[in-house]
Image (cartoon, rainbow, N blue to C red; front, side, top):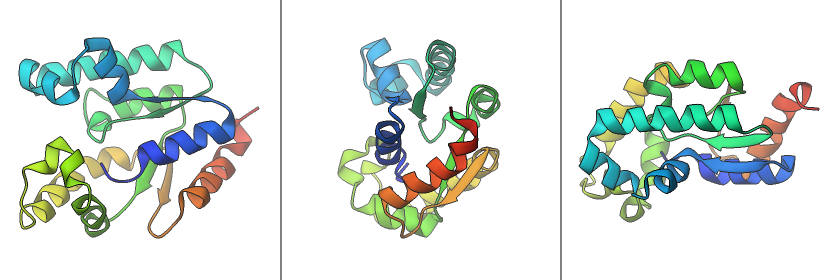
Length: 166
């Protein structure tokens, strides 16, 4: 959350002339509920199961696609292994402080952190990143995105993917 997955994914898909799918949006459309509603009505375990099913559907159904995952997706059900099996995964890397700086300005539009006070944010972000980082580090490519423009990040990704694209 806050690393720029949707912004970069959308720009990359346009540059590569590919479709862009945000897995959270795909999941919301499939279940006709917001992510928050699914979480609250079904619980996290069921949500993660739905998420895995949606990930499998997208990876098996689409080719020439840029897919943005939810921040927790790689950490459950061996999802990162599935992604690496069918595609080229990319971790947009930021430190906890960089994420906090970005997310502080976006609290109102992010339900998972909207209720947190300024003093609770650092611990929340650091804890989630600490728990998830081992899965993120399994990505095929890692890009430090601090102080880089979306244009520069997309260019770097295109360079990394060039040997693998037609």
